[in-house]
Image (cartoon, rainbow, N blue to C red; front, side, top):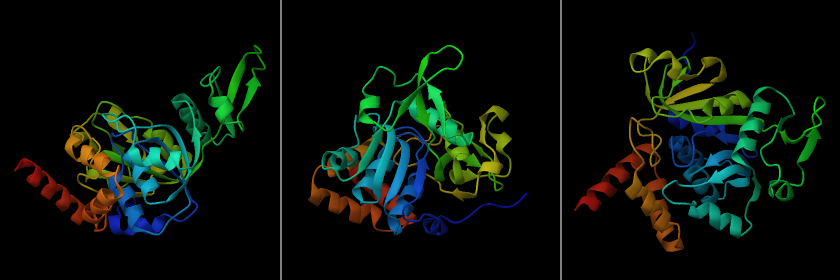
Length: 285
């Protein structure tokens, strides 16, 4: 089997302006944050981002990289809304398509099946149709029942973080929830997986049922220890609540955010991880 491992530094060149990117994970849980930070170090702009959003959406909005955001929600879990996303939306800096979570799943399933749409009951009777006037409804040819015709959400690129991956591109989650990472991978032309560890044997730590991603859907594998930080990646590490609170507080003030950006985001990934370690050392004093 081909070795699909690549270095994190090589990844930024994969992302091009104008792409549609799907980002796996859920809120502030198992987000491919090292890959997001690498996008910030590159030049790609005017991105369409499809996500069950968390700080991935917030950081990309703060950096002015997002043209359009397609989402079911954008939350930090223990903090209701990501402040950068909220500010960008309130200022009208980004286009948005806000769907019911089930509609996003249906759109990804349609793209994964190479269909233009799939029917769903999600969204019926809600304001989601008024907020997204491009959506249509269809009647069942069998019963006449009305459904939302959720259009497909095809992706140029999917970014996913997993607990483990092997060099061939198979990837494994060891936490309680797969989220919908497999749909993101299948809906995309290319998929890059970051992992806490790249290992030769995925069955050493989990059963076959934890093998979520098949190598046939994966383009590249990148080992990124603590690469989901500051989101959770259980059982490897919990959400870094102290750092997340610092992130959210810094976002409220331009001067504080400039200091945050210079300290944590202007360097490479090694510099980021060291700055986080230093942050916690200072907090413990």
